[in-house]
Length: 74
Image 1 (tube, one colour):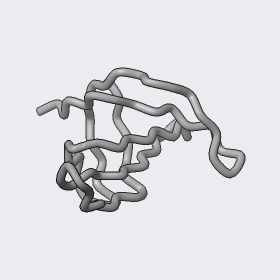
Image 2 (cartoon, rainbow, N blue to C red; image 1 turned 135 degrees about the vertical axis):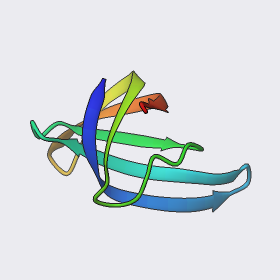
Image 3 (spheres, rainbow, N blue to C red; image 1 turned 180 degrees about the vertical axis):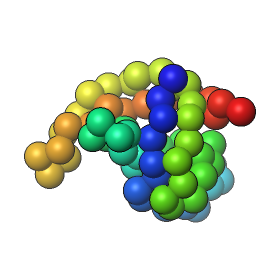
Image 4 (cartoon, one colour; image 1 turned 30 degrees about the vertical axis):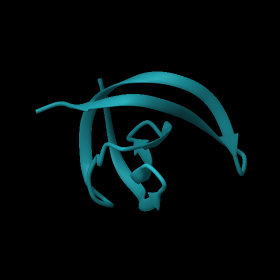
């Protein structure tokens, strides 16, 4: 389970419909990136979810965990 706060969320209208670009940060400082069709929430909202780790990347010197197939916990 991942509990994190949404820091960036953008809706991108593409050829296959709307995709959501979401950056989340946990209380430990871990950064997660998700791009896909699932809307995870609004900026500054804290959520709990399960997800598949797709990749580990770096952007502007910040290590990010790229996630896939998020499922929000109730």
